[in-house]
Amino acid sequence: MPISKTALDKPRLRWACRRGMLELDVLFSPFVEEVWDELNDIDKGTFERLLECDDPDLFAWAMGHQKSDDPALQAMMMFIVNRVKV
Image (cartoon, rainbow, N blue to C red; front, side):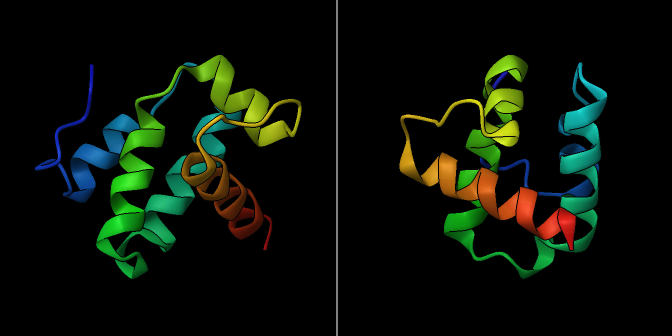
């Protein structure tokens, strides 16, 4: 189910970050809690688009096994991975 552009509130994002893979939950949930409020509107939109992607793709991008064809999505995934590592 696509996330609407009006769904920028944290409770809805928290729910959207609950994925079918624990590895993705561990990436996305802390990101929303710690970084979401600091993002500009463009980055928030990119993050929402990222959440619309399939879990196997997200996992492959996060692990570095593949790259997204969309440079903005790839950059956001790398930003999330690097931010959560810190």
